[in-house]
Length: 157
Image (cartoon, rainbow, N blue to C red):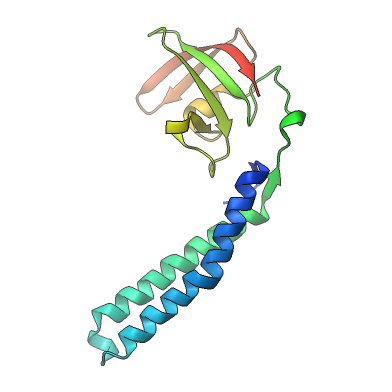
């Protein structure tokens, strides 16, 4: 993942906490699991050792990904957001032109996306389609299940 990763201060703090945990307690737990598996004998036929080493690789990959996300993170201040058009951290009320169903989403970074909480990623098909649109415009979104049209009803913070 390269480029700038826009997040709120709270999300950046959570990412830093998780990174600290992975570097300290997470690595210690993996090392302990590897040591226990190593004590069980021949490493060539030791499934526990292989599993622990694989877990270590996954752990280190997650750690590297999170380090990159923190390094490329830029904090967005709520009061600096332009609500004349859809941008990251805006809450957008849209109406599906076909079904007339109205929903409100907040456009957030990939790390903050949570559909259950009404937060969609800026890189999702809907997020990309809404970006830069103004109130009253119709955004055509190409999603995996086909093309959809959404009318922008309101943009707030």
